[in-house]
Structures are given as C-alpha cells and as structure tokens.
Length: 164
Picture 1: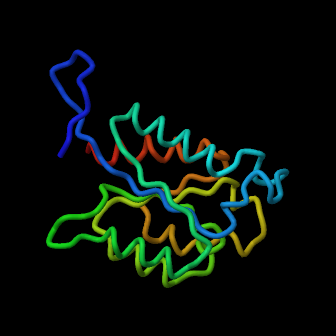
Picture 2 (picture 1 turned 180 degrees about the vertical axis):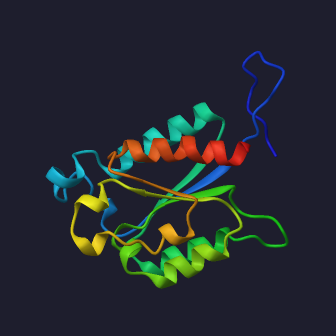
C-alpha cells in the first residue's frame, strides 16, 4: 500500500481508498427541496470530500447513481476477490433506497470492509417511513442530520476505523 508523507513524526499513515456511494436524487441536491436538503450540490460535496480525504492521507472514489442495480453492481465490484478488496471502506448515502432496498443491504453484507451510512437530513425527525434503514443494519455507524458536513464526519470516522 501507499503511504502518505510524514508530518515530521516517525510514523507514516497508510493511504486508504474509500468508496463513497450516493443513491437516487442526490444528483439533485441544491435544486430539490433546498429548505430540506440545503443549497450545496453533490459536486461541491464531492470536492470537499476529495480535499479532506487528501488531508487525511486517503483517496476516494465518489459515485452517484439513481439506479438500484448499478449501486448493487458497484458494491459487488468492491467486494473482496481472493482476499483483496477494491476499497478499504464504504461510505454510503443510499437516499430513499436506505429505507426500501433489501437488495442493497444484501450486497453490502458481501463486503469485508467497514461501512458507514450517511444522510444529509436527520431521518428520525422526518416521515416515519424514513426511520428504518436497511443499510444501517450493515453499517458500523450512521451519521445523519449534519448536511453535507456529514460526509466529512464519515471520513473522520472511517479513518479511525481503519487505523484501529
């Protein structure tokens, strides 16, 4: 694996590639219900994540699709093959699929890497059908209600999980 430059200490940080997946309608951030989801678009969030991941000594693969089957395929491609995973961890905002997709949850169960679920809004302050997440059942943790900043919090948490 690659190592990040040292900060003057004798320890170097291992560089990890983190897959960040985004589900349906997240490509409409900044346009769709800005009173609920804010005005920041997904491209701005991706850029912030890329910059922050670099500061942490990580790389990211930031993706979005509206198609459930494509999310499943991306997850399957990230799964371990002969003991080698395509990524060190997954951060996922499944959007509405979090509340409906058993297929997505089943695909995530294939992974042998940490999973963190992110939601821009606090799903527990919203409609009752948003209170349950199939993704949460597969994740080490869930971050919700912090807007786009939740992705950065997830990167911090993932880094901590990977360094344990």
